[in-house]
Amino acid sequence: MATLEKQVMVVGIDDSEHSTYALEWTLDHFFTPSLGFNSLFKLVVVYAKPSASSAVGFAGPGAAEVLPFVESDLKKIAARVIEKAKGTCTGKSVSDVVFELVEGDARNVLCEAVDKHNASILVVGSHGYGAIKRVVLGSVSDYCAHHAHCTVMIVKRPKIKQ
Image (cartoon, rainbow, N blue to C red):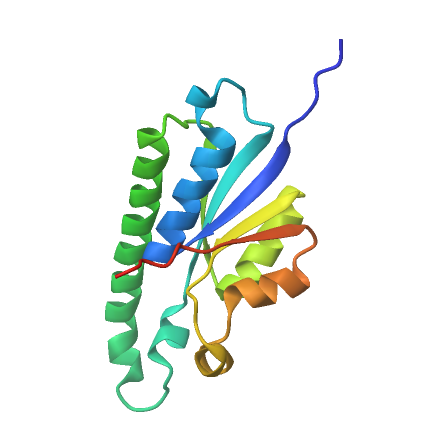
């Protein structure tokens, strides 16, 4: 009897609450063993670490001295984000997960991860930026929705009523 290979689901993470919520939501709805079924997907969690030069955003006198410190901080942040995601997966009893740390712009890194893994679904969180912030900062979810070669699920945190 032939075994079916699982489809791949890529989840993009960063150090935001929106990203954490998207990962937790995905685990709860697609991977939690307590739901009584084996997941139909293989899970790949991807963190895009910005390069030091893009994070600093300037060149000139003094830049060379600053870059090693920025790179060190970015590596610490990346390690913390990956460890938090591993803890989230472990806490939800999901152990069959691949974690990837890739340097580059998140928009490109996630679309490339989709292609690399031949993913069926890409899951990203939504920061909920308004139109002006989205234009200035760029929207990873918007870019991926238009450029990823798979279905893109944008997970939004529910609004908290006060």
